[in-house]
Image (cartoon, rainbow, N blue to C red; front, side):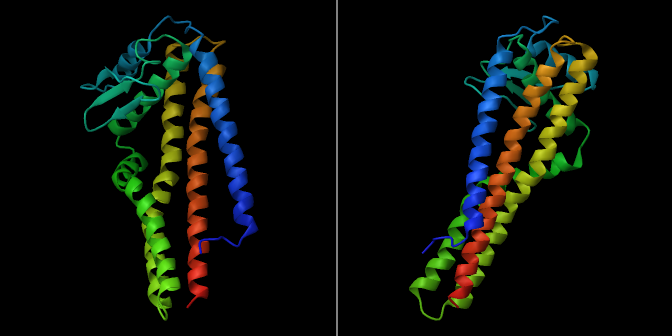
Length: 240
């Protein structure tokens, strides 16, 4: 019932899957190598966060340790920058890059960056809509197959599910430039304030770039899901 009769979809799915694997492998390799290289400045991630906040005249933000890996984040509601086990008080170039990136989000918040505000507005609903949209479209298809003369209603339900999922797609669409901008701010300050050496800045940039690529993959995956829902709706229309 949910078979997608489109070779293009399966080709795109394979491409996105391979791209995702390559991006994840590249990020892990770059981050791991960078974690073994001490920053030339000798400063820790905590120290550069404090310096970056002060440089942008941001006050009232605290730094806290959050156990685990990849738990680094900026929480605008709490006014905190959380740093993971591999970042908190660490002085590797990976730790410096990650901490500066999260601080970049604090800067975006401080300057009221419109697209950042929009992303924050979409964030609470994005996770729910990603699941709800798919199930609603599937429900519309199921109705068409289970009930005679339900084509119009099933098609309407499919459209409703797609409209709901579009919120998730829009979230990923705006998230990519927000993350790239945070990395740009991080790179600019790392270079300006000398937190990493001149011979380390290129490798640090590669770490930031690789991390940003994961959001590009997430956007592509979301677009692929949207394409699948549109194809499913097409199946529903043919049943009318």
